[in-house]
Image 1 (spheres, rainbow, N blue to C red):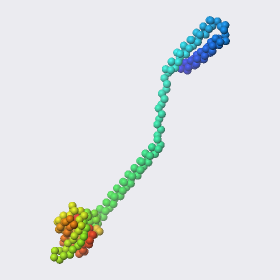
Image 2 (image 1 turned 90 degrees about the horizontal axis):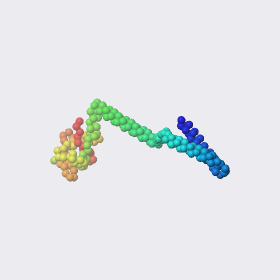
Image 3 (image 1 turned 90 degrees about the vertical axis):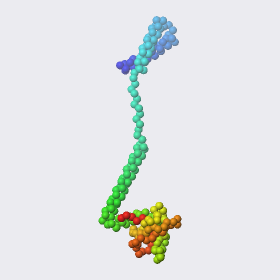
Length: 211
């Protein structure tokens, strides 16, 4: 139906043009045309133009197919960066999980050895004990007894009556009782069971661990 209307409209347009040319030709080239012939041509032109105007609004009102919106193309560079970030995060998580597993295995292995050998556990506790001071001098005095003077590194841990121990590597040389604390340092006397090895300047003083 639409095709027929289009063809009809085109035909009418052609006829209108032809009649108009005939009309112009008659006006310029044929001076002796009869009035009836001229009136007939005018009427035909008017009728054809009216038919053409009727067809044009119907053509304008015909629904047009909607134009689909353009689809956004994926950004290849953005996708590549996203994939790269995901790979980096995956590797970091794998590395972290591996380290945690290794630490757990090492801790379990150490505890297993310590359960079989108490000396290993004792050495570990000594090496991890808090450093609170360092020996300055060991004084041997027959009248008042032997004692040490030491620099206090953690004053909040040192007070008169506190027990400290001399650490050498992963062993304890002996224990002392703090007798005096001053702004310049502190003084401590050896407790029973002190080893025959004499303290040396720079020996580390710790709070003795609970085995």
